[in-house]
Length: 628
Image (cartoon, rainbow, N blue to C red; front, side, top):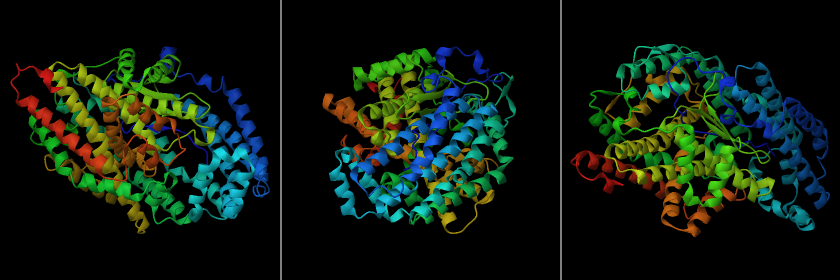
């Protein structure tokens, strides 16, 4: 029984304005900050919770050997473990988010480290549980469940443990693996400390020649600059900062893969991919179908890069040109407050209760909005069963920020609804379904904005944005997934990953996915793998692509349907982990075991390219409204 933290990161960091150094957190209005006092009023309360969990550990360990004595004893053990784990989860998320507010504060980093160590000790204290359940005769377990009515809600919970029988070790070995848990996070922690706290970027010249201190968030905006010199300089400076430590980062990635391999082998899985997919009962064929289907349709992606080359009038088209909007004349932006209002309108197809809950969260301290000095980059939704869902943003008024907000609100509402419709044991949910909820909301926002469009340039801008989202969420994440699979296969073959081997592999995949119309910098493009934090998440990124495919199908059903289709979708969110994820998505009428959802996304991408080309070829005095 491991602890669960519902932390969901978006595949790309949101934009941030170019300028001087980020402001200090104290300068930001409190209404744009999350209210972590809804978890603990202060660190003293956190310490008290920490102490309660720590004090419970000997008692949890002492429960070993009692499970088969009676149904009441089995229920008491489950409830004792869950009670302690609920407190631990609150302590974990609070310490993690307080640290993310300002990663420069060493005391908060130390507290996060302390509670992470406590989580390992908790895992050690309860590591015997699954093995003891599996040591019972299946008939005895069934008899205990029949004997104690309170165990009724745990039928799926125990069935899931039984499914893991082949990969669960004797209690002593489980304890050893649990003790290794702290070390298992080493490579990820090293990268996180480097990437968020120690990495220093240089300044580059902005569009007016002014110095701009690079940050990860500002980099995203600079790569959309209409000034090619700015894009080229930012690209070079950004990747050179990682490249200066490429051998260290490669050694850390090698350690990361070896860590995954160790646990896969220890638990007798066929390989690292199979081990990573096992907890959610996702068939490996789903992963392979993703890579194979996209690989079979790279010509559709190449159409898009050829379109960019045509519209931008750039020959050659370089990698640092790929993020430039094709139709900047149609660009529009929202500040945070306006974006929130638009979001509430866009979510109306999900019903009044859904919209009211989102509004309450926005006004009730769910969201930490603005970039500040030392704040963790990117965006995520975080929360557990007994806390509100919280969202970290780094807002800069770009359209991408609005989609990030829609994305993270999807996660947060998933957390909210699962916690209110499921008992604690099923109150979380796997990433596989989580990314459906987030992407669904992005698609609702896009549909809403396209329906409001009457201006030709604005429509072109939105269509290009839609294309870029599919490109980054489906095709780029599939490239990442294939890269991740191949480096793990190299590790399984006994190879050592090096900066050169990783760079050569990544460079080859860039050419495969983006095609002959893009020129890649041989000194820098191969370094891109070194800045992707998701490679430490253990086969996480493929779910962005599969979830997008599911979300496209589900959103189309909801938008074209009525109350029944809406409720079927909301049932997915309410289900939590009470079913396996492929079964959960099937509640909405989508079969993820087939390649059909992904083939439909590829077809949609091609249709969007067609629409852009049609608008470009249409006389400018034509009514653009029919393009919507």
